[in-house]
Image (cartoon, rainbow, N blue to C red; front, side, top):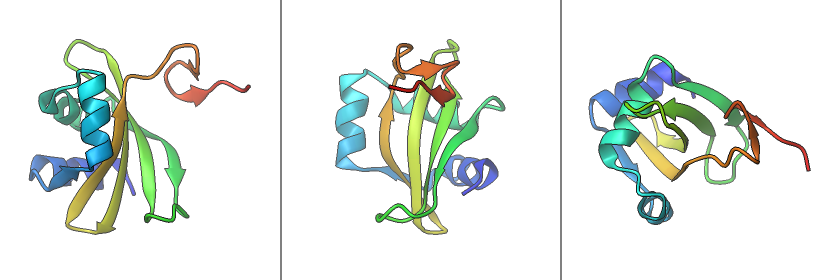
Length: 105
């Protein structure tokens, strides 16, 4: 998956959230507008790829809200016409370096 493919589907509103993503979104108080802004931002980027994920290939995206708050969004596609948002969360600074690299340990 590449970021342009993801942005295109988000622009067309061809995405859905899993129940898990909805629960995480609610827990972290992330709005749909923040998700769209984060994925459509020119600053958004794929930070991890999971080509062999048993649910289908997926990618972890780092995006930023309009207030420049980081959000991690795990996206997958079982079909090239629909983006599946698997989970969403506000990354913990104790677990990430510059929001992009997992800290070891």
